[in-house]
Image 1 (cartoon, helix red, strand yellow):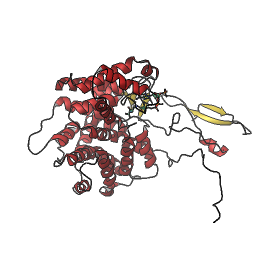
Image 2 (tube, rainbow, N blue to C red):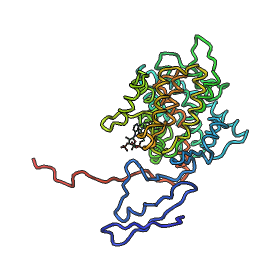
Image 3 (cartoon, helix red, strand yellow):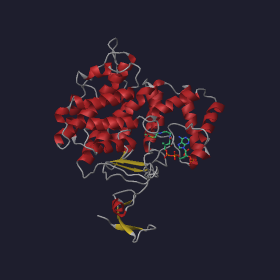
Image 4 (cartoon, rainbow, N blue to C red):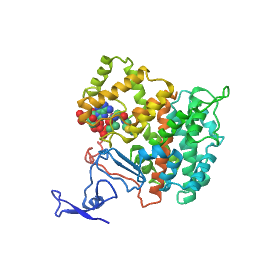
Length: 428
Ligand code: ACO
């Protein structure tokens, strides 16, 4: 129900238009502009700078204060006290699981980690040097061809099993895309390992030598999964909702989300961070400063990757936790003197002190640190966004589920048309 009203006066309209104003539990109020269409008016907001596209009870962000809550719980507390599987339950079902519920979801996820054997054949159709994100887009979309036994989105049981299948199979497909790329045999998942350990095992184990999980790496991996799990209506989640609003099956919707995540302004950023560190190359002070100057130059398209965020205009709370994990992993590996890390640390310092970055509130974001951790753990750069996609699958599917079980319409924006007015086809 609307608590208040906004009144819009538009030149040329006989009467002012009254629009309901709604308040959520937290965050800015919203003006319901749906009635404007009947007055022959549309709102105009490219980039969705001030548009709420839906109601949601999953995640809350206060960008100015650097707050991120999942189902009300601060990310810093979840990262410390919880784990990725528990977070999956929380995001999908709304509450933390009790012991029995936790054991049940963990078992269900483990039981679904294997992919249909025919899926192996999909991989053979790709070039070995294909970017693993392109493989992921294709194979995840293709899952609909394998699991159509439970794809009726109007049935709760089908929605749930599809969600569990996606959470469970994403690490397997991600690791397979890596193994295919480097020409090694696929590893079957192992149910005796936890989610993060199993992923590292599938990535790094090979038939010639025993693979032992490093507990520091497994903890770091789990944190990376947790810190990327959801972020309200970001570009890829909005893509999943838009695709889902047509009634498309969940595998197709998640594949659309993966495609949207791939761009360097979104999930491609952690890969872009490492490419940028490579491009900077030389860790001398003059060289680093040269790149900082390029980032500040309006005529130069170069930007410092891993800095800035559309919503956080204060420190990204995920970045704080990620930085801690980054320090732990680097200490474990004795890599404090790595030249690339030296560049990263110097950039971080400059950005926190330079007027240009301070004024624009451009802080290191979560991807700045996650990229460095992944690199240190031996994960190749082209797998970074794939790992982001594995983490974000729970967020995507939770939003899809929330939308499908709520009141929704097909997403169909309108436009400000700036093309030719009607004209006649030239006579021949
Ligand atoms: N380096 C240098 N300058 C920057 C950067 C950067 N990384 N980011 C923003 N700016 C500047 C812009 O040039 C602009 O300056 P101006 O006001 O003088 O014109 C100002 O800061 C505002 O930038 P916008 O592009 O308007 O901010 P927007 O909210 O649209 O973009 C974005 C946010 C895309 C994240 C941007 O900061 C960026 O490109 N960062 C680098 C890529 C990156 O790290 N993306 C990861 C996002 S986090 C995630 O997806 C998990």
